[in-house]
Amino acid sequence: MRKVKRLPKPDSLRNNSEMWTKELLAEIDRVGSYTKVDDSFKNKYRQKDVQSALEKMYRKHCCYCESIVGISTYGRIEHLKPKSLPDFYKYTFEWENMHWCCEICNTSYKKAKWNFQHPILDPSKEQIDIFLKLNLVTGEYEAIEGDKRAETTIKHTGMNRETLTKARRRIIIHFMKDYQVYCKCGAKKEFCEQWEMLKEDFDYPSLYDALLNFVR
Image 1: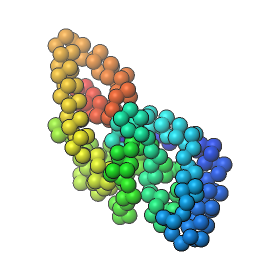
Image 2: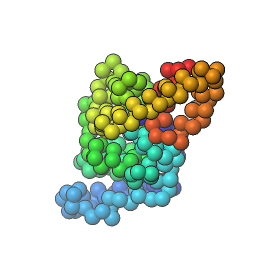
Image 3: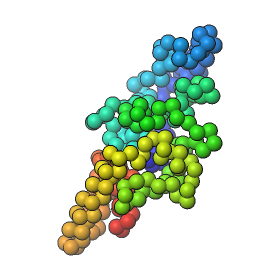
Image 4: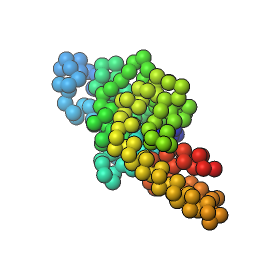
């Protein structure tokens, strides 16, 4: 997970979110339950300009695991504050609540989890690296100084699931081996510059940032 800069609100939300919210809340009152509301009231945020803005904002990476979305999994518009919880119905069409997420993180891990006391970190609002750090031995994310919100984030998003930690460890091993070869050739600077340019084309760019900071 890493900090991103939120882009301007897409036109479809700027022009319609207030109306869509009123319609949704009215329909919930009418039928008596969010689960009974037809999807046509719930899913109007699934607009092309919304998806495009989120993809650009996250540079096509998942907001949680940072895998590239669209290669092995479909992309999902993630509501950080789960839209299915009563406290958050009103944020269903709120741009500030939307993020770009891989299908696995969205449907298998984050789901509708929420901790009201220690809420999950928001990549578009908070400096993630003051809460979380990557262990370059285990490939796991760790909460800095036991921060409770960081712990919630790790738990709710499955950031340390086995498949991810194994993938990160493989990258760490290969990166360090290549780094040693370049150093023997006197090309440490070229190696770092190359990876600084290429990291956005790969899964887990924050891992490459951590590795580059370590070797510089």
